[in-house]
Amino acid sequence: MRILDTVAAFPGEVGFYAKRLTDGRTLSFGQDRPLVAASVIKIPVMVSAYRLCMQGGLDLDEEVVLRAQDKMPSCGALTYMHDGLTVTVQDLITLMIILSDNTATNLMIRRLGIERVNADMQALGIPGICLRRLLF
Image (cartoon, rainbow, N blue to C red; front, side, top):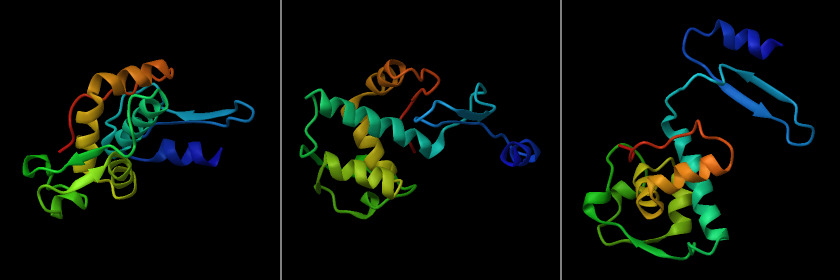
């Protein structure tokens, strides 16, 4: 396959796993090698939030107050918002995914807990995804 030839020739570290849900067909490369997730870790945080919501333990309209010490200077819109801003959980998830907002992500990680995110990934059969810390 052309994609595997291209990936194999890439000088950096690459790994991926894709599965077609309709028939179970897979395509992968380096899928068992641990890699740094970077902002991709925001997807498991989102999944964990929606799982908790479906279980009745999280209200998407729940309000979170932004504090100066919450702000991450690396990226995102919340860094530039005023202290005391009230943001809903749903808005945090949206900012986390659409703008890759690290402040929103950390607020969600604090709300959910690192342990919950990791337990959800384990429960979903993907124990190789491991959130180890807040983002910076």
